[in-house]
Each structure stands twice: as C-alpha cells, then as structure tokens.
Length: 105
Image (cartoon, rainbow, N blue to C red; front, side, top):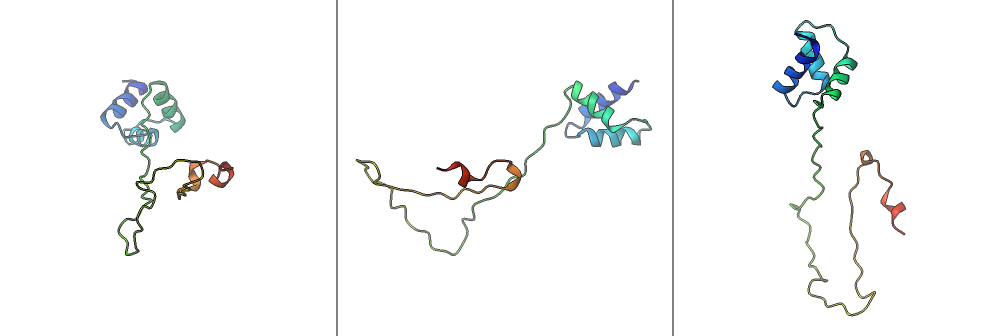
C-alpha cells in the first residue's frame, strides 16, 4: 500500500482529522513522512477538513438590569430625521476587519 492511499484511508475513516492528526496517525503506523508532504497530498485530494468556528455569545439576556421598552415600536414616520437609532456591535480583534468607527462617516 502506498502513502497516498493510506492518507486517503485515514482521512475517510476520521473526517474531522486535519493534516496534523493524519500525520501523527501515519507516524503511529510506522510511516516516515514529513507533515508538509501529508498536507500537500491532502490538499491535492481535497481531504482537508473545514475548521469549526467557535460560537461567541454576545448577548446576556439573563441580567437583573431594567429592560427598557421599545419607544420606536408602532411609530409612523412621515419625514426624515424623525427617528434616530443606535446599536452596539461586538467585534473581536481576530476578525481582521477595520474598526467600525473608521467605517461610519
């Protein structure tokens, strides 16, 4: 059995394995192979797993603070500048986007 078919067999048996785990499994099985070679073969065969993103909870609805009513609910707007609203947007530094204060004019 050649290396490429063994990589495919491991990746199909454990679909959540990335190239690092596949490389470790190959080493456990006695193969002498570089991790970059495993990455190259998995990329060529489209066997890389997609990363699961961590769910970030941004709203804490269970608090003891007062909840204010929505004063804009039911308003009928007939002209411009009758209702101004604001929103808080949570952004993590890892999202690689410019800060919101730069985007808002």
